[in-house]
Structures are given as C-alpha cells and as structure tokens.
Image (cartoon, rainbow, N blue to C red; front, side, top):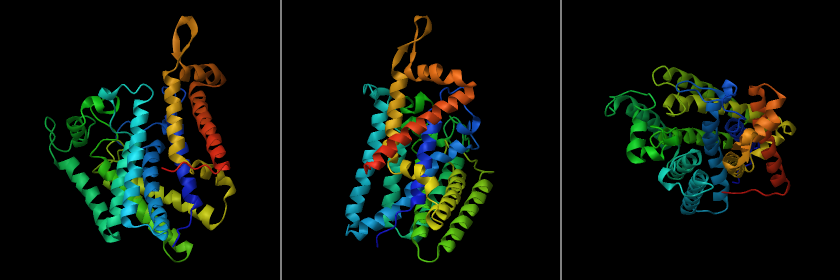
Length: 371
C-alpha cells in the first residue's frame, strides 16, 4: 500500500515552521508580545507548543513515509539505515548551526539543541516503530512518561535532594552538567532546555504522533477517524492538565504532563486541519502553509543561518559606534513605523514572509530538499 499524502499534515508542518521563525526573530527581544515568548518556567504559552508540535508531526509522518517505502520493497534493515542516516544529518546540521560561521568554538560548543534533539528523537522513535508493535509502543510510551516522572521527583540530586524542579537543581540539569559539562550547555547556563534526560519524554511525544499517523491510515469513514482523534486529543489535554497539578507543565523540562498536553493540542489542531483540508477539500486558504511545509528543515536552517549572520555582521551606527546588521535593519526600517512591540512583531513577520517566498520558489520548481 502506498500511503496518501495528507495536505493537512503539510499545512500543520508549515504552520509550525513559520511559528518557529516568527518567535525566533523579533526585532527586539525586550519588545515582544507575551504569547510569542516561552513561559519563564512552569506553565505554557502558544510559543511552548511549537517544538512539541514539530516532534508530534515527525511521528504522524512516520507511518505514512515508511508504509510507502515498504510498498517499494524496502526491508526493515534498509529502513533502519535510512533512519540512522537522517538522524545523523539532522544532528550534524544542528552542530553546524552552532559552530557557524567561525567553526573555532569547539570548547564552548552547545552539544544539544533543537535540531540535535530532533535527530536523536527521530532515531529512537523510528527504531521503536520498526521493531515494536502497537502494544509494545503503548507500553514504551507509558514507561517513558511514568519513568521520567519517577526519576525527576524521586531521585535525589546531590546538594538539593529529590523532587526539586527548579532550573539548577533538577535531575536533568545535574546529568547535563556531569555528562556534557556546563560550558557545553545553552548559553553556558547550569541547565539546558534541550538536555539529555528530557529527550526521553520527547520520544514519547513522537510516539504519540505515530499512533495518530496510524489512525489516519486506518480503514473506515473519515468521520470515525476524526471523532477518535478529537476525543483522544481532548482526553490527553485533560490528563496533562490533571497531571500538571503534581508534575507541572514545563517546556524546558519536557515534563510528562507537558507531553500529554501538547500532544493533545497537536492532535486537536490536526483534526481540524484534516477535516477542513483533506475531508472538505478547502485547500486554497492553506496553500501558503502547505508550501512552507514542503521544505521544513531547509527553510529552518537557512533562516537560522541568515539571522546569525546578520547578528554577527557589524555595521556603523550613530556616534561612530557599531551595531549588528540585525539591529540596524530593525532600528532603521521598522522601529520608526510603530511602537516597539508592534515594530518588533513586524520585523518577525517580515522574516516569515521572506522565507515563504523562498519556499514558494523552491516549490514552483519542484525542488524539495530531502534529509
């Protein structure tokens, strides 16, 4: 069987990548609307949904992708090799972005990061998918979520004791400092939002996406799939909120409650897109999102490299001083147009628009950069 391509999944992926670019490129970090910032620690904002949505989408796409590859006669060993190569490429791209453009900062290189986590999670989740059946995957998901909760709340951390979920005292931060070294953590902090231990519940996010992808591939009327997806998503949201009273929803810790809550939110959004785009056929409005979703990693990497280049590129400013090209563009062209927060948002939206044009040009030429 060759799996159908779901325009709703492409649109969801495109919206997620556009959201990543939007929140990563404000004109001024001191002038940002609160929903476009991460929660300070416990809790969530719309921005905290973006990364788990992408990992959830990775899971949804996996049954569709591997079903089509199996239809072409691929063996499990070949599929495993494909997963390993793809994971290494994604991890390598994350390392490349961290080192760019000087490539001489190995002693302070941040080992983990967004793409590095995607690469690791993809490798583990795809390995589980290729070797374990649905029942085993459900058991694995439960073990990951409950096991992570037990580790984070019951295992004592030297100098702090058990159950301390503050940034410096939680078990994940302790492991990252011990294994990776503080100089290799995010901005040299005592913790890293994409740390090692929290990558395990992130695998559960992708496994929940896999179950969703299998549901969308299942036989039967579309309304039945929609009802199941909407119902289970609402259940996951409710369970995540309930668990969050004891194990708070937290993006940086990727808590088990956060996994359930964000997977539920992702499933609910996908259900709406699936109904509108694939069932009802209302596709015209979603075309920009679909185009964005056809080259997601390429657009994300190129956007990050451009922004980093603009930040590192010094240009003259008033009084003989220098500033970054990034700040110069914002203060020269956007800041005079509106109040700081609106000008900062306009700057970010311009980034999103520019990369939509790039994605559209690639799409118009049927150029899809596969990883």
